[in-house]
Image (tube, rainbow, N blue to C red; front, top):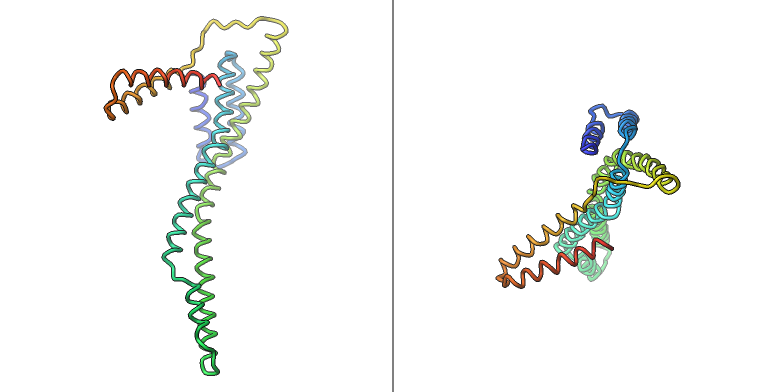
Length: 229
């Protein structure tokens, strides 16, 4: 519950109407410092540290590459379809080359060459502009999340300091005792989702109930071994 309150306060600070980056980061750090002035259980701090590090990794390794890949794919598909619907500039140039140049039609022929070349360049420029149009929005999306990333990195720094102090104490002076046992709730939720999905698909596809149960057991065992990797 404590971390939920912290996240709520940090979000409120990030969303302040007054757009002052220095003040925003100052208030974020003050709130984090105040939170960690209280005694936080060691396991809670370690779980929080993993959660924050994973959030940065997901954004940098998973989310943004997927978004960029989707945008690139849509743009490439759109541009390829439009290119296929364009006139064949090569054939048009060949048509012009087949017209013999004479003293009477030389100026008209050169004008047609110039107009055709200019049209080709304009088409290329338009496609390049269309292709790069989404990227300013993507850059704005990345920059808008920098304040949160700075906040996360600062909290990770505080957590590292706190955890290292606790580790030194437990390694050299006193034993670590945790009266509250922690369970991997994510694994429990994951198993529940796997069972529901397997039963739903099994019933939809008309699979026998014994085979559905066998698939559910295989999914649970597989999920357990994957969680241990």
